[in-house]
Every structure is written in C-alpha cells, then in structure tokens.
Length: 100
Image 1 (tube, rainbow, N blue to C red):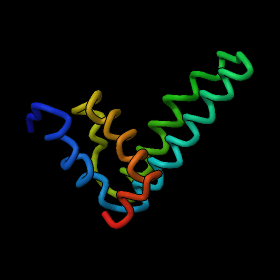
Image 2: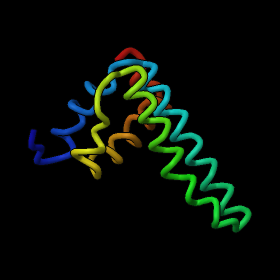
Image 3: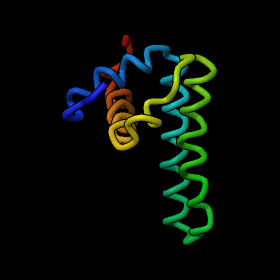
C-alpha cells in the first residue's frame, strides 16, 4: 500500500490495532517511554536512553505478535507508524479511541 499522507495512513494504522489488548500494550510502552525520558532529564542519567526504543517497540511488538497476530506497521512505514503510536496514545488519553 502507498500512502500520500498521514491522514491516509492513520485509518490503516487503527485497523492494524483493532484488538484492545494490542492497543493496551502500546499505551503501556508509550507511558514507560515518557517515564524513562523524564527520569533521564531529571537525573542526567543519559545511559538509560537505550531503554526508550526497547520499551517502546518491545511492548508494541508483544501486542502485535501476541494479540493482534500481525506484523507491526513500523516495518513498512516507520515514520508514519511512530507518529501513529503517539496520535493513538493522545486519543486514548482524551478518551476518543475507547470503542474502536
């Protein structure tokens, strides 16, 4: 599939995250990523930044392989997928994605 914009991509992204357990794994990973970044900024312990991609992708991939049973969109659309993660997380926090 070819997408000309994130607006075209995002409905596909949401369809690839239809299982609420998969989305939950993304939310957990995103929350932990924010926590690690905050910790690094507050303490200056830059060494812990290596955890950011491990936690972020690790939880997301567990969601895809364990619950959704599909390949993460990041393999084909890395930039749109990363943006999609944060847009979906923001919608979750605003309670706009609950019944999806």
